[in-house]
Image 1: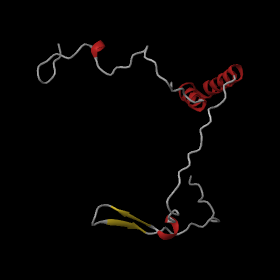
Image 2: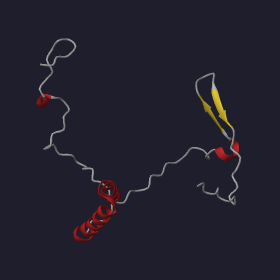
Image 3: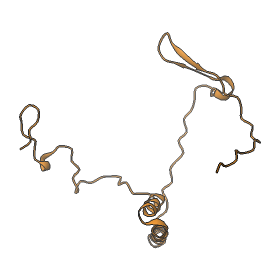
Image 4: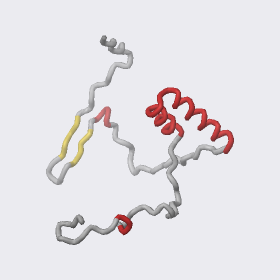
Length: 119
């Protein structure tokens, strides 16, 4: 029998505290997203598994008529105008006597040609 460091025996597996009860009601069950299901099928079963999973997800959507849950946008009012980090840089206070300054980075050329591929 295994014992803890103080010599007491370990509790039996069914007496552990905090274990998930399969009959316990969860108010918001976590359901995998269709993209997660298709990606998992692709990893496990290849392209054919991904196609089959995508077809089954589509059939499920058509038959059950489930609409995607829309998330409401979150808007938070700011007390001041935002600081332009790209133009001014940023100063981050570490403690009462120390702060760190990061200067603004030079702008990148939006019309620069992409780097060629190496072989």
